[in-house]
Length: 245
Image 1: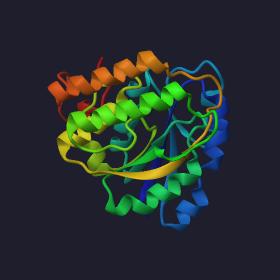
Image 2: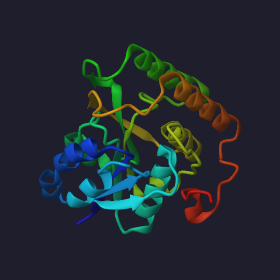
Image 3: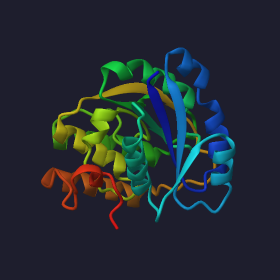
Image 4: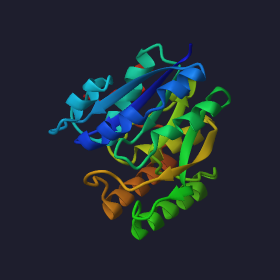
């Protein structure tokens, strides 16, 4: 059976992992011919995130330092060192619905990278402020114009990869700009992104993304990658995804 890794980056998301991990549709995925494992990359939680994740059967990777981008790159590296065939990553704050993993997996055999599209999907009341809604649209529009390749939702936190496409990404993001950098890498490497409309809901617990400050960081990353398509500190092999010491 092909193997699917479901990766959840987390920091102080005890409520989220307790809600999300049991909802991952193991039975449906197994019926579709997939063996499934869960990997939680923990960024130094002070709550029960690690304890709950382990109790629910997840492998927990402890991140040195903090930052969503660093956590995701660490998780990607562990995936590439494993024998798993495909990876799906989603934020575990309750905004994304793990039941929709099935919709991604149906497309995985014929697609390189799949992104969950919130902006052309369904956004629950209260899930996204007006400022965040406008900012997401502006950043997505700007990325499309700047790189000449259409993207439907630049900042989505719900992605699926096959092993080959993920191994080509050259990343150095430390924080919330990681999804924007993944888009730019796909453009540079000629990797086609497919989009699947998804439902987006109000998060569980306290928000960690700052609307305006993080929006500027994402915009800056787009501009930097337009001028310098490949990270300056890139290393060969697994170093592309390793956290720099």
